[in-house]
Length: 230
Image (cartoon, rainbow, N blue to C red; front, side, top):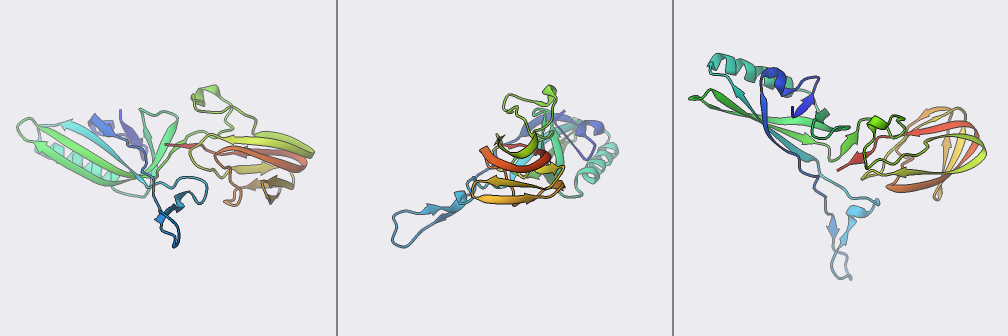
């Protein structure tokens, strides 16, 4: 099928997939020469993870339609569908369970008048990483793949408890925290005051890998986040 976005896919307009190009994101290098030091320092890792550029996605489709008026009508429909809005979820059927955040930047067409075959080249600008469609606390096995890590993400706290949340994504994630009462989370050398209800703040991130922390309070608390991968 290729891709689906904005509740539609190219097949709905009679287009058939020829090829797709889904390269991995390109890292950003931030070298800086420091006076008195040999070589240079790469500041792209100053926050503990690589920085990446948006990635290009390219799809090629073809449409067989010998009638020029009908070809132009389909072309206008496809352009009106794709060339609007900003970055939105895009699902590729070759990568189930994940989606891109992407925006169409170009729809290029060419036609072979003799055969009535029109070729579409559709280019997207996409956020660097694919996003898991279901959160890490999703309980269903059919939403898991081999790269997932099955773990408890909800806890009952009576006094204090040490927990370790594992982020197997390629970058850090900001979880949504739901707590039945006010609690304190000590993580590394930082302390976070968590109010009752739902909290989502860039101040509290799950770094790549293990995230040991101590939770103090009384009640229930849960963490939910979406893994991001290359």
